[in-house]
Amino acid sequence: MRVNLEDNNFSHSVFGISVFALEVVQQRFGLRGGPMAFHQFGHSLGVMQRTRQIMNAFHKGGIVDYVDLCLSTIAATCHDVVQKFTIVKVEKSEEDNLYGRTFRKRYSGENERESAEFALSLMYQANESLPDVNFTYQQCERVRNAIMATVAVFDVNVGTVVQPALTLDCDPIARAVMLADIGTAVMGKSADYVKEGEQLFVEDNPDMKQELDFSKMSRKQEEWYRARMMTWLEGQAKFPLGRFKRLEFELEGLPTAAKNATRLLFASHELSMELQQKRNNECAEMSTYQLYKAFGF
Image (cartoon, rainbow, N blue to C red; front, side):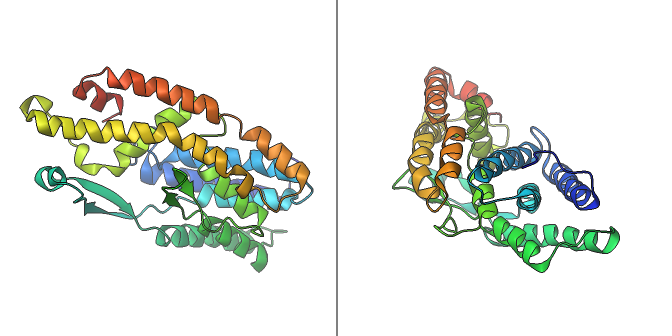
């Protein structure tokens, strides 16, 4: 299967849609430290890159072709163009109520639906404006379903994020995009996983985004902030193992050759855990203010 897009109008339209989607993500959510600390350009680009790697692995099992690669590229680049959320109070402890803890709650499901509509509108525009381009209804629906499949929940039993739509008989392009969306811990550079975890914490804890002055806090309040950051880091150290343990289940139904090729991609969980634990040890030696800054606040 070709990795590069072929020189025809269909391929050009896929390239154009993907580039435009990434530009929209950058404009809306930023690039490296923009309005969204994690769900910004870098994340969407990474999902696209990991999706292409996984699709090439699937191709070794004979279950995807060049058109599938194109459709998965559109789904990957468009999957997070909408990021609506609300700020909700967290009331798990006396300190939460006392100090005003809040959390960013995504409009899960709605964001994915609107992101899918964005992708399909661009595919329909390509049909109307470019000769020899005809995304079929079935192809558009596959892109829609792949984006919708990225809806994820945290499973406390395995200590990792899971996607309920990842089933034995799911579409391979949906499977690829799903695995790519949450794959940093087991694919690619482990140092990226460590940094992205801190970015996600910053994004999801809006009450900590203001310039906190720890010199004016009580010891109890300072320790409350510190405990939140350290607890998150502890969870991050366990997350890659949970992702790795889920792998065999998430590859069920694939041909043996596709499984073997994908396993080779999911090989960095041990290094991710090692680097995260090293980072956790470093953070434990920091003052609360240093830890706060180290996260990127």
